[in-house]
Image (cartoon, rainbow, N blue to C red; front, side, top):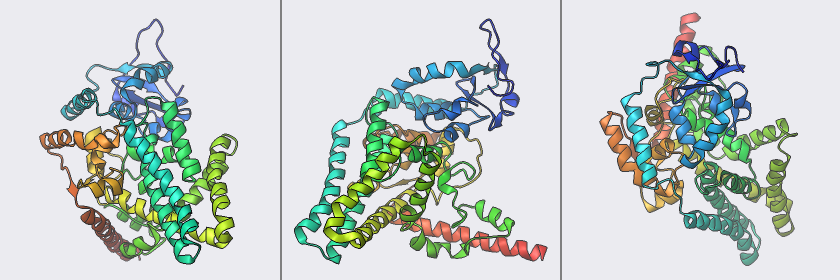
Length: 443
C-alpha cells in the first residue's frame, strides 16, 4: 500500500477529502476515486491488464467514467472483485459533486446498453477477418499469376499494405475487447492479428493506445502527441519548445516535411524501433508474444524469398509498411492533431474527449477507408462499442453536446487531411515567433 493507505478495522470506512486524495500521485504512492470510493493503486497498477500507465494517469483524480468506458457491462462485477483488496475508504459526503454532464452521460451509457449497442455482429467481424487474410494471400498470388518483375512486386506491396491497413482497423476492435464476450478470446485473436498477420505486439499496442484513450491530446500523458523531436502541435507545445531554446528540426517548416517524414516513415522506422526496444526490455516475460511477432517475418521470408529473392522481398516489405503507415497516419491524425492539445486539465469524461476528437462525414467509402474511425467522437466516448454501431449512438451524442454547449465537429475527409497541414503550419509559426522572441529577450 502507498503512504497512508490503511483500512479502518471493524468494517468502518475511512473518509477522505480531495485534498488528501490529490497528495497521492507519486509513482510509489497512487490513489484514485471510482464511484465515490477511494482505491490505493500503487501496487495494483503494475499488474493492471491495460498497463500501469493508463490507470496511473488518473492518480489523484476521479476515474469513474474512464472505468466504465474501459470495462464492458458484463465484466464490471468481476473487475470489482479485484478492486476490493485495494479499496481503502470512501470520499466524504459532498466531496464528489456529480456534474450534470456526468449524470447525462451516464444516463446515455445506460441507453446505449438498453439498445444493445455494445452487442457485436460476429458476422461483420468474421467477414473482415476473412478479408484481411484474403488481402494477404492476394499479394502472393499476384506474383504467382502475373509473374515476377519490379511492377508486380510493387503492386503486391501495395496490396499487402492495403491489407495491413484494414487488418489494423480490425485488430483495433479486438484490442478494445469489442468482438467476443470473452476477454480471453478477444485477447487471443488480437495477439494472432498483431503477431503472425501484422508483425507487431498486442501488449505494446495496448500500452500505447489505452493511454491515448484515457487522456487524449494531453501532452504529459498521451503518447500520440509526444512528438516534439519532430513536430510541435497545438498552441502550448510550440511555446514550451521555444522557451527551452533548442530544437531538433525547423518546426516552421513542419507542414512541408510532415508528408515526407511523418506518414511514410512512422511504421517502417519509429514503430519498428519501439517494438525492438519493447521486446528487449521484456525479453524474460514476453517470449510467447515475441515468437508470434517473429512468425510474421519468418512467414514473409519463407513465402517470398524463394520467389523474388532477398532484395525483392526487402523492397516489397518496405512498400508494404510505407502503404500501411501512410494510410494509418493520415486517418488517425485527422481526428486529433487539429484539436486542442494541452496538459492534463482533469476535465470530466465528455469534455475531455470532445476537446480532443472530431468526426469525418459518414459515407460507404469513409467508413471502409477509416475502419469506422470517422466516428472518432463516439468511439472515444464508448471505446468498447463495436464500430458498426457507432453511427447509431451519434444522434444522442449530438443532443448531449447541444444541451451542454459543447462543439460537435464533423468535417469532410478532404478537409480533415487538409486541416492536419493547416494545424502544423499554425503551430510551427507560433514556435518560430516565440523562439526568436525568447532569443531577442535574452541575447
